[in-house]
Image (cartoon, rainbow, N blue to C red; front, side, top):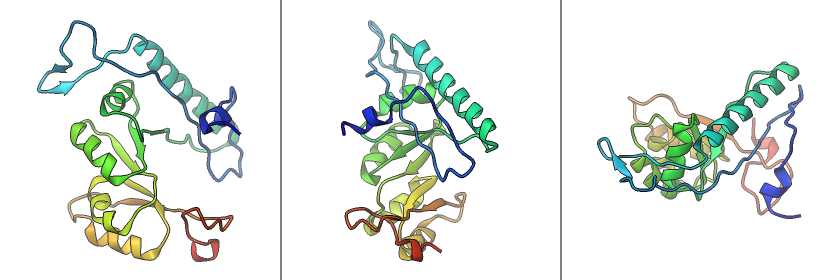
Length: 193
């Protein structure tokens, strides 16, 4: 029971040799402009200050170190930390990026587009982690580095057709509904191959 963030809290992170995935979530306090200063600086790049910025940077570094140690113990490569930024502001994402976070996951193409416009030029790696609707395939193909929720072949075809030739290939992951739950997205395990 309880909220997912409460259920996922743990002092230990571990990976096993046969783990198919791992996830960890951390939350950070709300950020605000530095008192007495304009939030617009240097060619309209918004910089934010948080009274605990050093703590945020330290926590992010500690988390990455824990991931690396766990991966070494399990004999696996170090996983990439994906910060789920849905329902987070562009300012919060920018601050996390300034603290060293590169990969951010969004559930909705439309919500991500506004953030991507505001944060263009930062070198953020964008992941679509929510269900991809057919009518959003063109936008997803041109705006994301990863689509982690492919559940049918026609979505792959739509993404491939819409991906501009000059862009790097789109990384995709197949979402499999292993429990065959009607209310969840993902293809049937037999259709995954």
